Image 1: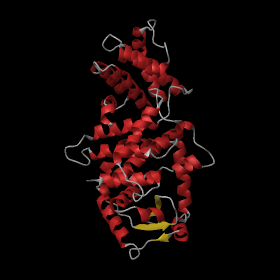
Image 2: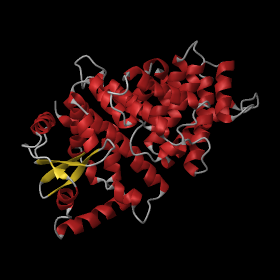
Image 3: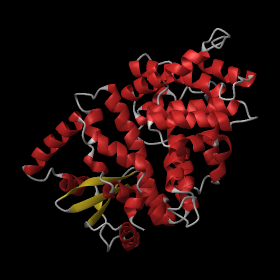
Image 4: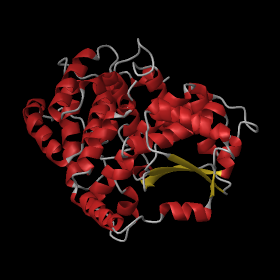
Length: 399
Protein backbone atom coordinates (compact mmCIF):
# COMPACT_ATOMS: atom_id res chain seq x y z
CA UNK A 1 0.00 0.00 0.00
CA UNK A 2 1.17 3.52 -0.82
CA UNK A 3 1.72 5.31 2.49
CA UNK A 4 0.07 8.45 1.07
CA UNK A 5 -3.23 6.54 1.14
CA UNK A 6 -3.01 6.37 4.93
CA UNK A 7 -2.97 10.12 5.41
CA UNK A 8 -6.02 11.68 7.02
CA UNK A 9 -8.06 13.54 4.44
CA UNK A 10 -8.66 16.38 6.90
CA UNK A 11 -4.94 16.67 7.60
CA UNK A 12 -4.25 17.12 3.88
CA UNK A 13 -7.12 19.54 3.23
CA UNK A 14 -6.43 21.81 6.19
CA UNK A 15 -2.67 21.72 5.54
CA UNK A 16 -3.18 22.86 1.94
CA UNK A 17 -5.32 25.74 3.18
CA UNK A 18 -2.83 26.73 5.87
CA UNK A 19 0.05 26.76 3.40
CA UNK A 20 -1.75 29.61 1.62
CA UNK A 21 -2.24 31.67 4.80
CA UNK A 22 -0.29 34.95 4.83
CA UNK A 23 1.29 34.35 8.23
CA UNK A 24 2.39 30.82 7.34
CA UNK A 25 3.94 32.05 4.10
CA UNK A 26 5.76 34.84 5.95
CA UNK A 27 7.31 32.50 8.51
CA UNK A 28 8.29 29.95 5.86
CA UNK A 29 9.98 32.67 3.79
CA UNK A 30 11.91 33.76 6.90
CA UNK A 31 13.03 30.17 7.56
CA UNK A 32 14.02 29.68 3.92
CA UNK A 33 16.21 32.81 4.01
CA UNK A 34 17.97 31.53 7.12
CA UNK A 35 18.59 28.15 5.53
CA UNK A 36 20.10 29.80 2.46
CA UNK A 37 22.90 31.06 4.71
CA UNK A 38 23.76 27.50 5.72
CA UNK A 39 22.54 24.72 8.04
CA UNK A 40 20.64 25.90 11.09
CA UNK A 41 22.78 23.74 13.37
CA UNK A 42 20.17 21.08 14.16
CA UNK A 43 22.55 18.15 13.81
CA UNK A 44 25.29 19.87 15.78
CA UNK A 45 22.87 20.51 18.67
CA UNK A 46 21.77 16.89 18.63
CA UNK A 47 25.37 15.67 18.71
CA UNK A 48 26.10 18.03 21.60
CA UNK A 49 23.06 17.29 23.76
CA UNK A 50 22.22 13.64 23.06
CA UNK A 51 23.77 10.34 22.01
CA UNK A 52 23.66 9.16 18.41
CA UNK A 53 22.70 5.51 18.37
CA UNK A 54 24.79 3.84 15.69
CA UNK A 55 23.88 0.48 14.22
CA UNK A 56 26.65 -1.07 16.28
CA UNK A 57 25.19 0.37 19.50
CA UNK A 58 21.53 -0.50 18.83
CA UNK A 59 21.23 -2.98 15.93
CA UNK A 60 17.73 -4.04 17.01
CA UNK A 61 16.49 -0.45 16.85
CA UNK A 62 18.02 0.10 13.41
CA UNK A 63 16.41 -3.13 12.19
CA UNK A 64 13.04 -1.83 13.35
CA UNK A 65 13.67 1.53 11.71
CA UNK A 66 14.77 -0.11 8.45
CA UNK A 67 11.57 -2.19 8.39
CA UNK A 68 9.38 0.90 8.98
CA UNK A 69 11.29 2.84 6.32
CA UNK A 70 10.67 0.03 3.84
CA UNK A 71 6.95 -0.21 4.65
CA UNK A 72 6.40 3.54 4.37
CA UNK A 73 8.64 4.13 1.36
CA UNK A 74 10.93 6.65 3.10
CA UNK A 75 14.17 7.19 1.17
CA UNK A 76 16.07 9.83 3.16
CA UNK A 77 19.00 8.66 5.37
CA UNK A 78 18.00 8.39 9.02
CA UNK A 79 19.93 9.09 12.23
CA UNK A 80 18.65 7.97 15.64
CA UNK A 81 19.36 9.79 18.90
CA UNK A 82 18.59 9.26 22.58
CA UNK A 83 18.61 11.85 25.36
CA UNK A 84 18.26 11.50 29.11
CA UNK A 85 14.72 12.06 30.37
CA UNK A 86 12.29 10.38 32.78
CA UNK A 87 9.37 11.23 30.45
CA UNK A 88 8.22 9.16 27.50
CA UNK A 89 8.90 11.28 24.43
CA UNK A 90 9.96 10.95 20.81
CA UNK A 91 10.27 13.50 18.02
CA UNK A 92 11.07 13.72 14.35
CA UNK A 93 13.28 16.73 13.65
CA UNK A 94 13.12 18.61 10.35
CA UNK A 95 15.74 17.28 7.90
CA UNK A 96 19.05 19.04 7.48
CA UNK A 97 21.76 18.41 4.87
CA UNK A 98 19.80 15.46 3.47
CA UNK A 99 19.44 13.64 6.81
CA UNK A 100 16.35 12.95 8.89
CA UNK A 101 16.63 12.79 12.69
CA UNK A 102 14.48 10.91 15.21
CA UNK A 103 14.98 11.49 18.92
CA UNK A 104 13.90 9.21 21.78
CA UNK A 105 13.91 9.82 25.50
CA UNK A 106 15.92 7.26 27.43
CA UNK A 107 12.88 6.15 29.45
CA UNK A 108 10.86 5.46 26.31
CA UNK A 109 13.55 3.23 24.80
CA UNK A 110 13.86 1.32 28.07
CA UNK A 111 10.11 0.81 28.58
CA UNK A 112 8.66 0.31 25.09
CA UNK A 113 8.94 -3.09 23.44
CA UNK A 114 8.29 -4.68 20.07
CA UNK A 115 5.21 -3.29 18.32
CA UNK A 116 4.96 -0.47 20.87
CA UNK A 117 8.25 0.94 19.64
CA UNK A 118 7.46 0.16 15.99
CA UNK A 119 4.37 2.32 16.37
CA UNK A 120 6.46 5.21 17.74
CA UNK A 121 9.00 4.89 14.93
CA UNK A 122 6.33 4.74 12.23
CA UNK A 123 4.47 7.65 13.81
CA UNK A 124 7.55 9.90 13.71
CA UNK A 125 8.39 8.85 10.16
CA UNK A 126 4.80 9.70 9.23
CA UNK A 127 5.34 13.30 10.30
CA UNK A 128 8.20 13.57 7.82
CA UNK A 129 6.44 11.62 5.09
CA UNK A 130 3.35 13.86 5.16
CA UNK A 131 5.29 17.12 5.18
CA UNK A 132 4.12 18.20 8.61
CA UNK A 133 7.33 20.18 9.11
CA UNK A 134 6.24 22.48 6.27
CA UNK A 135 3.75 24.19 8.57
CA UNK A 136 5.85 26.01 11.22
CA UNK A 137 3.32 25.64 14.02
CA UNK A 138 5.92 26.21 16.75
CA UNK A 139 6.98 29.56 15.30
CA UNK A 140 3.37 30.63 14.84
CA UNK A 141 1.95 29.61 18.22
CA UNK A 142 4.98 30.33 20.40
CA UNK A 143 6.60 33.29 18.66
CA UNK A 144 6.62 36.87 19.85
CA UNK A 145 3.77 37.79 17.51
CA UNK A 146 0.84 35.47 18.21
CA UNK A 147 -1.53 34.58 15.35
CA UNK A 148 -5.13 35.74 15.34
CA UNK A 149 -7.49 33.37 17.23
CA UNK A 150 -9.04 31.92 14.08
CA UNK A 151 -5.64 30.96 12.64
CA UNK A 152 -4.58 29.55 16.03
CA UNK A 153 -7.66 27.33 16.12
CA UNK A 154 -7.07 26.19 12.54
CA UNK A 155 -3.46 25.35 13.38
CA UNK A 156 -4.37 23.28 16.43
CA UNK A 157 -7.23 21.55 14.60
CA UNK A 158 -4.81 20.68 11.77
CA UNK A 159 -2.18 19.48 14.24
CA UNK A 160 -4.62 17.02 15.80
CA UNK A 161 -5.46 15.60 12.37
CA UNK A 162 -1.72 15.48 11.59
CA UNK A 163 -1.34 13.25 14.66
CA UNK A 164 -4.11 11.01 13.31
CA UNK A 165 -2.15 10.64 10.04
CA UNK A 166 1.07 9.86 11.90
CA UNK A 167 -0.78 7.35 14.09
CA UNK A 168 -1.96 5.53 10.98
CA UNK A 169 1.59 5.36 9.66
CA UNK A 170 2.69 4.00 13.03
CA UNK A 171 -0.11 1.43 13.12
CA UNK A 172 0.76 0.36 9.56
CA UNK A 173 4.31 -0.35 10.73
CA UNK A 174 3.33 -2.04 14.01
CA UNK A 175 0.55 -4.25 12.61
CA UNK A 176 -0.59 -4.93 16.17
CA UNK A 177 -3.63 -2.93 17.43
CA UNK A 178 -3.12 -4.07 21.01
CA UNK A 179 0.54 -3.03 20.97
CA UNK A 180 -0.40 0.34 19.48
CA UNK A 181 -3.00 0.89 22.22
CA UNK A 182 -0.44 -0.04 24.89
CA UNK A 183 1.97 2.47 23.39
CA UNK A 184 -0.63 5.26 23.58
CA UNK A 185 -1.53 4.21 27.13
CA UNK A 186 2.10 4.46 28.20
CA UNK A 187 2.52 7.85 26.50
CA UNK A 188 -0.63 9.15 28.22
CA UNK A 189 0.00 7.73 31.69
CA UNK A 190 3.79 7.66 31.98
CA UNK A 191 3.41 4.14 33.37
CA UNK A 192 4.83 0.86 32.16
CA UNK A 193 2.74 -2.29 31.92
CA UNK A 194 5.00 -3.81 34.55
CA UNK A 195 3.07 -1.82 37.15
CA UNK A 196 -0.44 -1.79 35.65
CA UNK A 197 -2.56 -4.46 34.01
CA UNK A 198 -3.49 -2.69 30.77
CA UNK A 199 -7.07 -3.01 29.55
CA UNK A 200 -7.85 -1.35 26.22
CA UNK A 201 -11.62 -1.24 26.78
CA UNK A 202 -11.23 0.48 30.15
CA UNK A 203 -8.81 2.95 28.58
CA UNK A 204 -11.13 4.03 25.77
CA UNK A 205 -14.08 4.18 28.15
CA UNK A 206 -12.67 7.55 29.17
CA UNK A 207 -14.10 8.91 25.92
CA UNK A 208 -17.62 7.87 26.96
CA UNK A 209 -17.15 9.38 30.41
CA UNK A 210 -15.80 12.58 28.88
CA UNK A 211 -19.01 12.82 26.84
CA UNK A 212 -21.14 12.25 29.95
CA UNK A 213 -19.35 15.07 31.74
CA UNK A 214 -20.72 17.43 29.08
CA UNK A 215 -24.23 17.28 30.51
CA UNK A 216 -25.61 19.83 28.05
CA UNK A 217 -25.62 18.67 24.41
CA UNK A 218 -23.56 20.77 22.08
CA UNK A 219 -21.41 22.41 24.74
CA UNK A 220 -18.39 20.96 23.00
CA UNK A 221 -15.02 20.53 24.64
CA UNK A 222 -13.59 22.20 27.68
CA UNK A 223 -11.65 25.39 26.87
CA UNK A 224 -8.36 23.71 27.74
CA UNK A 225 -8.92 21.32 24.81
CA UNK A 226 -9.23 24.03 22.17
CA UNK A 227 -5.53 24.72 21.71
CA UNK A 228 -4.24 21.18 22.34
CA UNK A 229 -2.11 20.12 19.38
CA UNK A 230 -2.56 16.39 20.12
CA UNK A 231 -5.88 14.55 20.37
CA UNK A 232 -6.85 13.09 23.76
CA UNK A 233 -5.11 9.66 23.81
CA UNK A 234 -8.25 7.48 24.19
CA UNK A 235 -9.69 9.39 21.23
CA UNK A 236 -6.62 8.36 19.25
CA UNK A 237 -7.25 4.72 20.16
CA UNK A 238 -10.86 5.09 19.03
CA UNK A 239 -9.69 6.68 15.77
CA UNK A 240 -7.25 3.81 15.23
CA UNK A 241 -10.02 1.28 15.83
CA UNK A 242 -11.92 2.92 12.98
CA UNK A 243 -8.74 2.69 10.89
CA UNK A 244 -8.29 -1.01 11.76
CA UNK A 245 -11.85 -1.71 10.65
CA UNK A 246 -11.50 0.19 7.37
CA UNK A 247 -10.47 -0.84 3.88
CA UNK A 248 -7.02 0.59 4.64
CA UNK A 249 -6.45 -2.36 6.99
CA UNK A 250 -8.73 -5.10 5.71
CA UNK A 251 -10.18 -5.81 2.24
CA UNK A 252 -13.81 -5.92 3.42
CA UNK A 253 -13.53 -2.97 5.81
CA UNK A 254 -15.41 0.33 5.89
CA UNK A 255 -14.86 2.75 3.03
CA UNK A 256 -12.46 5.66 3.34
CA UNK A 257 -15.43 8.06 3.37
CA UNK A 258 -16.88 6.19 6.35
CA UNK A 259 -13.50 6.13 8.10
CA UNK A 260 -12.91 9.85 7.70
CA UNK A 261 -16.45 10.72 8.80
CA UNK A 262 -16.05 8.60 11.93
CA UNK A 263 -12.78 10.31 12.81
CA UNK A 264 -14.38 13.71 12.29
CA UNK A 265 -17.15 12.82 14.74
CA UNK A 266 -14.51 12.02 17.35
CA UNK A 267 -12.46 15.15 16.69
CA UNK A 268 -15.43 17.50 17.07
CA UNK A 269 -15.29 16.65 20.79
CA UNK A 270 -12.18 18.83 21.04
CA UNK A 271 -13.51 21.82 19.11
CA UNK A 272 -14.58 24.95 21.04
CA UNK A 273 -18.25 25.47 21.91
CA UNK A 274 -20.19 27.96 19.83
CA UNK A 275 -23.30 28.12 22.02
CA UNK A 276 -21.74 30.65 24.34
CA UNK A 277 -19.24 32.36 22.03
CA UNK A 278 -19.52 36.06 21.30
CA UNK A 279 -17.99 36.11 17.83
CA UNK A 280 -19.89 36.68 14.59
CA UNK A 281 -19.22 33.08 13.57
CA UNK A 282 -20.62 31.71 16.86
CA UNK A 283 -23.75 33.86 16.49
CA UNK A 284 -24.27 32.64 12.91
CA UNK A 285 -23.82 29.03 14.04
CA UNK A 286 -26.37 29.44 16.84
CA UNK A 287 -28.92 31.00 14.48
CA UNK A 288 -28.46 28.15 12.02
CA UNK A 289 -28.69 25.53 14.77
CA UNK A 290 -31.93 27.11 16.03
CA UNK A 291 -33.62 27.09 12.63
CA UNK A 292 -32.14 23.72 11.70
CA UNK A 293 -33.23 22.08 14.96
CA UNK A 294 -36.81 23.27 14.43
CA UNK A 295 -36.73 21.96 10.84
CA UNK A 296 -35.36 18.58 11.96
CA UNK A 297 -37.88 18.22 14.79
CA UNK A 298 -40.72 19.18 12.44
CA UNK A 299 -39.55 16.94 9.60
CA UNK A 300 -42.53 14.61 10.11
CA UNK A 301 -44.88 17.55 10.80
CA UNK A 302 -45.07 16.66 14.47
CA UNK A 303 -42.64 17.80 17.19
CA UNK A 304 -42.37 15.36 20.10
CA UNK A 305 -41.87 16.16 23.77
CA UNK A 306 -38.46 14.47 23.63
CA UNK A 307 -37.36 16.70 20.75
CA UNK A 308 -38.57 19.79 22.60
CA UNK A 309 -36.60 18.69 25.69
CA UNK A 310 -33.37 18.37 23.69
CA UNK A 311 -34.04 21.68 21.93
CA UNK A 312 -34.40 23.42 25.31
CA UNK A 313 -31.14 21.88 26.53
CA UNK A 314 -29.44 23.75 23.73
CA UNK A 315 -31.32 27.04 23.96
CA UNK A 316 -32.67 27.19 27.48
CA UNK A 317 -35.92 26.48 29.28
CA UNK A 318 -39.07 27.65 27.47
CA UNK A 319 -37.06 28.56 24.36
CA UNK A 320 -39.49 26.40 22.38
CA UNK A 321 -43.02 27.80 22.35
CA UNK A 322 -46.17 27.83 20.27
CA UNK A 323 -45.23 31.33 19.17
CA UNK A 324 -42.37 30.05 17.01
CA UNK A 325 -43.05 30.73 13.35
CA UNK A 326 -41.89 27.43 11.87
CA UNK A 327 -42.67 28.42 8.29
CA UNK A 328 -40.64 31.63 8.57
CA UNK A 329 -37.70 29.79 10.14
CA UNK A 330 -37.82 27.25 7.33
CA UNK A 331 -37.83 30.02 4.72
CA UNK A 332 -34.82 31.70 6.39
CA UNK A 333 -32.81 28.48 6.60
CA UNK A 334 -30.93 28.91 3.27
CA UNK A 335 -29.84 32.45 4.23
CA UNK A 336 -28.61 31.23 7.61
CA UNK A 337 -26.68 28.44 5.91
CA UNK A 338 -24.95 30.86 3.53
CA UNK A 339 -24.04 33.26 6.34
CA UNK A 340 -22.60 30.41 8.39
CA UNK A 341 -20.56 29.14 5.42
CA UNK A 342 -19.01 32.56 4.93
CA UNK A 343 -17.87 32.85 8.57
CA UNK A 344 -16.87 29.34 9.65
CA UNK A 345 -14.43 26.52 9.07
CA UNK A 346 -15.51 23.04 8.01
CA UNK A 347 -14.83 21.77 11.55
CA UNK A 348 -17.24 24.35 12.99
CA UNK A 349 -19.94 23.39 10.50
CA UNK A 350 -19.51 19.77 11.52
CA UNK A 351 -20.33 20.73 15.11
CA UNK A 352 -23.69 22.08 13.95
CA UNK A 353 -24.42 18.89 12.02
CA UNK A 354 -23.39 16.80 15.04
CA UNK A 355 -25.77 18.77 17.28
CA UNK A 356 -28.64 18.53 14.79
CA UNK A 357 -28.13 14.75 14.87
CA UNK A 358 -28.58 14.90 18.65
CA UNK A 359 -32.00 16.49 18.08
CA UNK A 360 -32.92 13.87 15.47
CA UNK A 361 -31.94 11.00 17.75
CA UNK A 362 -34.12 12.33 20.58
CA UNK A 363 -37.25 10.78 19.08
CA UNK A 364 -36.29 7.16 18.47
CA UNK A 365 -39.59 6.36 16.74
CA UNK A 366 -38.38 7.70 13.36
CA UNK A 367 -35.00 9.27 12.74
CA UNK A 368 -35.08 8.83 8.96
CA UNK A 369 -37.09 11.96 8.21
CA UNK A 370 -34.91 14.10 10.47
CA UNK A 371 -31.77 12.60 8.96
CA UNK A 372 -32.93 13.56 5.46
CA UNK A 373 -33.27 17.18 6.55
CA UNK A 374 -29.81 17.08 8.14
CA UNK A 375 -28.27 15.58 5.01
CA UNK A 376 -29.70 18.43 2.95
CA UNK A 377 -28.24 20.98 5.39
CA UNK A 378 -24.91 19.13 5.38
CA UNK A 379 -24.71 19.23 1.58
CA UNK A 380 -25.41 22.98 1.62
CA UNK A 381 -22.69 23.45 4.25
CA UNK A 382 -20.25 21.31 2.21
CA UNK A 383 -20.04 18.78 5.03
CA UNK A 384 -19.61 15.17 3.80
CA UNK A 385 -22.88 13.25 3.95
CA UNK A 386 -21.06 10.29 5.52
CA UNK A 387 -20.49 12.49 8.55
CA UNK A 388 -24.27 12.58 9.11
CA UNK A 389 -24.45 8.79 9.02
CA UNK A 390 -21.65 8.50 11.57
CA UNK A 391 -23.06 11.19 13.85
CA UNK A 392 -26.53 9.64 13.77
CA UNK A 393 -25.14 6.28 14.92
CA UNK A 394 -22.56 7.58 17.36
CA UNK A 395 -24.18 6.03 20.44
CA UNK A 396 -23.91 2.47 19.15
CA UNK A 397 -20.83 3.01 16.98
CA UNK A 398 -18.62 4.08 19.87
CA UNK A 399 -19.55 1.32 22.31
